[in-house]
Image 1 (spheres, rainbow, N blue to C red):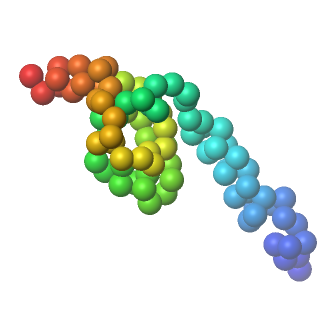
Image 2 (image 1 turned 45 degrees about the vertical axis):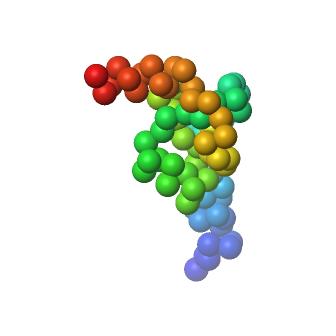
Image 3 (image 1 turned 90 degrees about the horizontal axis):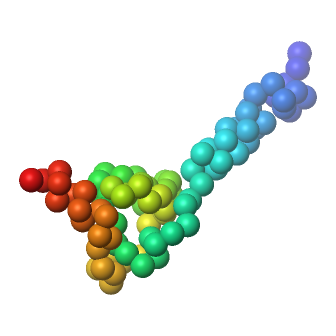
Length: 88
């Protein structure tokens, strides 16, 4: 009888490592002005990111992992414009 340790390529840790590498490739963070602006993101996505570390996508399309106080930066003009068009 074989054990998972005897055949790691048939699942288990090897599968998890492959899936993690794929997620990392898919979740690449875009460079850009996210360092200069606060962006609009759904509250539930911010909470999810805080728990999982998963990047979020703003209304303007910027993708990054939040980690700073948005109150210290001006609002992204593109996010602001998109939000205004959604609420009017």
